[in-house]
Amino acid sequence: MKTLIAANWKMHGNLGWAQKPAEFRRLFAQSNDNVEILLCPPAHMLEPMVNASKGLDIYIGAQNCHDQISGAYTGELSAVMVAETGAQYVILGHSERRAMFGDTDKWVAAKTSAVQKVGLKPIICVGERRADRVAGQAEEVVGAQLSGSIPPKADGKNLVIAYEPVWAIGTGLTPTIEDIATIHDHIRSCLTKRFGVRIADKIQILYGGSVKPENAEEILALGDVAGALIGGAGLDMKSLAAIAAAAGE
Ligand code: PGA
Image (cartoon, rainbow, N blue to C red; front, side, top):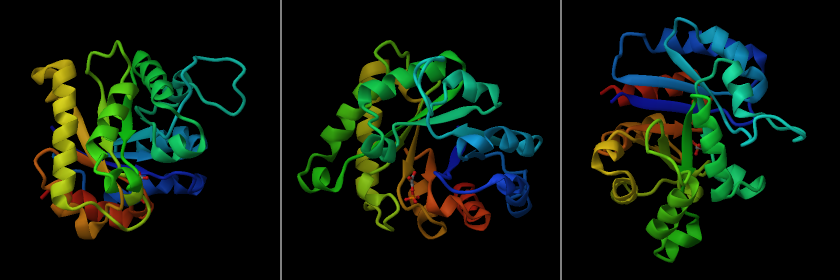
């Protein structure tokens, strides 16, 4: 399984950033077969980014979508519309969406079904808040989010999970390596219980939350960390290339 290095650009950038895929490839040559690169720009940049990434072996993904195919949902984008741009992934249930835009486990599950139905790959984000960790409930909270955010009828195929502790996002803080390993183990065992070992073993589990060139190698060296979901450090192609290089080690 390749290591997935995914940059979530959030609400940053402009159409001029379509030169970033080429810039990335100048910094990180095509030849590394161990690493898969995914850029998730704001919605208006999806198609230009898909075009700009052609032949560069870089995937493009959306940061969210709606669960319905079409309808009176002002300001929303459906999975079909994302697919139409040529993008291949959709991040779902990011903690910012959960905290600010009302994404619940149930809604994330519905969005996940919609995304899978059109052949896109969902990246479902889960993660505990600071208070949950202090209360010793990180595993419980993450387990509950996971079970509620994966659609009831899911078969475990075509699915990526990202463990992103809320308190580590954009703060420069990260859990200890042991704590990351513990939660990833827990996620893996929840997935195994639900889908059986053969299918669960194929599900990539990413870590996200203040991943930087300085800590990427140590985090990505963990056995069950199959990649990273990167915010701040993914806006700069130099640091993204450094993280990708750490993944290829
Ligand atoms: P960060 O964000 O890398 O800036 O902490 C991660 C994320 O929100 O996915």
